[in-house]
Image (tube, rainbow, N blue to C red; front, side, top):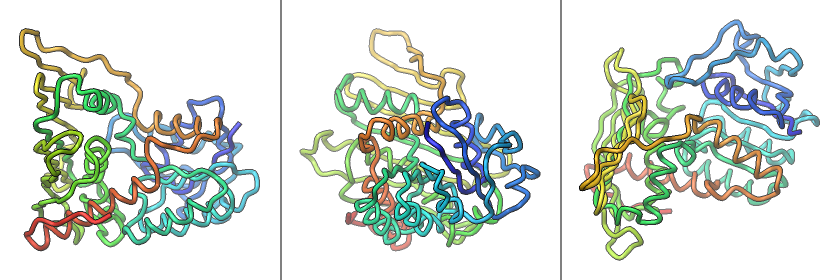
Length: 344
């Protein structure tokens, strides 16, 4: 039985608690938040995706409550520390948990900057416990399908891929503070940047356009990812758009359109059956997907790694650090108006 402690009871902290509550191999042994109202359950964060942050903390009567996360880290009863704090705090708490010998789950992004991310990677290489980053799209049904058909060239090579992740602003002090959250580029768009890295490798270049609206960092970006010819997937045209600057009421929308040599696939989370496959001489086909959310699946994966002793491979600390470096190159491109070479 893995005893988990969750630090940070915002939207993602509650979402992770939801996942742990569904399992019989985990005990939620402790929770932590500096806001006493969140810690008591008097105030509860809400999610921007249906199914997020469903349950509160009031029912966790057996869980210890800590206002300071380092006290939870130092609790000898805790096996796994799950860090869902504001991004700029990830480095200090993640390294402290690693140095304490705990297994560590870190909500995305790994850190606010690539320099901080590299420090976490270095600490993870020396750590006794395992470490994992919540890059949930690598586990999301419909996206795992896409990764599989790309890898196996089920419908031929990818000719073009477009990913779009758009929303109205989630609100709250953290999400309005670009120095802390990194704007939509680092907090929202990073999901698609990471998934593109997962499927196609690290791009050689990025060409990004965008603007800053409410955070002081990029709140809407559109990026073209450049790859050299001769790589495993050839030279597809790959574009991703990320935005949380839409007008209030727009909600959250997540889509992709992939054009293969022999098929086209679309995903739209607004549809009851979001994944559609189009092929010549076939009627449009709705692909059946596991209804489980990627958050539950990523946590299940990491718990299995802990149980079996196999280090996480689907996403590593190095992967997550490289994604931040790609995002930083995107910010540089948007600022300079030039195509930027990605350095990892």
